[in-house]
Amino acid sequence: MEAASVPGGGRSVLGRSPLARLPDRVLRYGLTALAAAILALIAYFFVRLVGQAGPAFEKFGVLGFTFGSEWNVNAEHFGALPLLVGTLITAGLALLIGVPVAVAAAIYATELCPARLRAPLTLLVELLAAVPSVVYGLWGIFVLAPKLQPAEQWLASKLSFVPFIGGGLVTIPNYFITGLVLAIMILPIVSAISREVMATVPADHKEAALGLGATRWEMIRTAVLPFSRSGIVGGAMLGLGRALGETIAVTILIGNAPKLSSHLFEQGYSLAAVIANEFGEAQGLHRNALFAAGLVLFVLTLLVNGVARGLVLRAARGRLVHGTGDGGDAGARLAETVAGA
Amino acid sequence: MSAHGSSAQPLARFAVSPARRRRDLFARTAILSATVLALIPLVLIVYYLLRKGLGSWSTSFFTTDPTGNTFFKNSNIGGIKSAILGTLEIVALASAMAIPIGICVAIWLVEYGRNSRFAHTVRFAVDVLTGVPSIVFGLFIYIALVVGTGSTYAGYKGSCALALLMLPVVIRSAEVILLLVPSGLRESALALGAPRWRVIFSIVLPTALPGMLTGVLLAVARAGGETAPLLFTAGATLRTNFNLDQFTNSLPVQIYSDVTSPTTSVEHRAWGAALTLVSIILLLNVIARLASRRSRLG
Image (cartoon, rainbow over all chains, first blue to last red; front, side, top):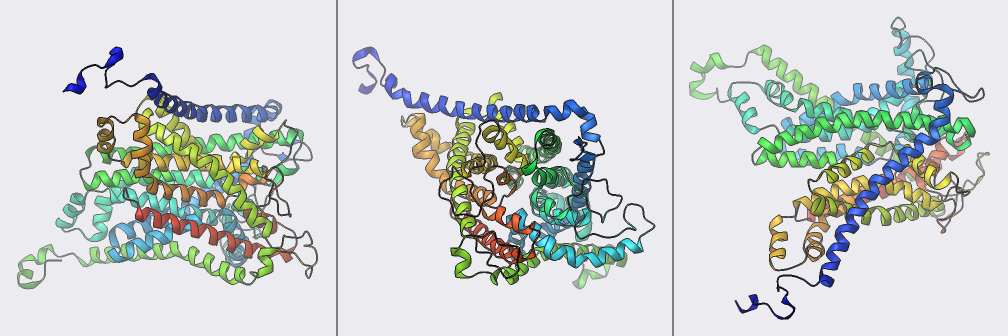
């Protein structure tokens, strides 16, 4: 009680001297400035990238550059369509191959697997994410591609009547092998997000399905999958973002031929690969065109990732709001997985 | 499942029909085989890394710089000393930049920014950074530090590119951990009269640090394996270099240039270097997982 009486200076003991308050101010404004600096940095990079890409867009037009079908360094003519198509085909293939496998692995780990195997299985799939992209490229070009080439050639000649797949000579570096390696590379992220989303399915729903006499698979199909659909789609899109931006493995595996190839087992190029492969020797307009390719890639991945994050985080937030106990925890873990992705 | 035993007869109409049972079995088999399929690449990669990589490991492999003599099959192509040391230097400097800044931004987000509109903008910016393709980070740093400065590639520029790449991972993982620190701890300290900065430095950070270590180590591991951001920032060179103001070699770039080399004699070096790189990164991952197990915040 006595301490509450005001000692000299008329200042409350609960107040602090201006000097004592100083560190608080410094910390607060310092940290705020740092956060603002990150925003400024991103804005700066974006503006400078647009500036460097400018001359290429001026010469060919934004659409003319993005969808121009000829990339010819010697003629100084730059159209990014062959690169864009290569990026989209390989990333699309990666989704086609990778997502079903990743989702199946997630279902197995959450619903079917013996409890003792769950942690090691999860760990093994996640270890795939620890392998650097250049090592995937090394393994792909020296081991996987030569071993699979006869099989690809067989497929191409058997399916010669199917447009885009059949016919033609199979080269060792090609779209298909690139897509296959990309599928392996996006497996851990798609699987991790699917697993976390499936872990948020309320036990009530699953038990209700089983209680009504559903088999395991019917329970998965009626209770688990519908509940986790948006999260799985979001995870797949995050994987797509990864695949679109993947550089080194693609540069090693795609063959770096700037043309619109007529079938799946031919060499091609991608937006990321063209930068990695040509930037070192590029001069003048060529260099501007490579910056422009980087900008197209940047915008493309930005759009895909934006949609993906929206989907996954909405799934996570929904669980956090009406999830109780278990569901809430799982929602938090899901948000954490996305954050680390 | 409980349809067995004495009450089996009356419950027979609830039994699962053979068609449904077959479909269930088929689906479960398909799921199991897809899971096995998912594990095959890892087994294959590890197998080939060990088979082809161990053969090129030797003392001289780690203690000599790569030579440029790759044209003849029998010439001495050298080891990967400069690449290992270069990677350690570049990643150490990148960590020294990205980890403190990342943790500071995470502290701001949790302790000060919270749900303000500005904090949401910063979170959005960090998300944007997360999705940027790694080669574009290289372009960013090239634009900022190489174009128009009259200088060329240098190790520290590579560090800057890797730091940019690590930053979003560090920020988001640290933020998640900081949010787990019970607000009761903060409130008790504030009620005892501690100023905000002391609460942060004496209560929040010590509680969160072990948990943050996991995210930080995973970010370091990811940066260590990146090739694309280094190609046009740190460059490629043969010599061991302790001056990060010059071209600096790194393991990923060494592997990349060996893989894309027109001569086949360097393939062994690429496998040996890849095994080295994967071992370092796996080690970091293992430490990260052990750290997360010891964290009280889980």
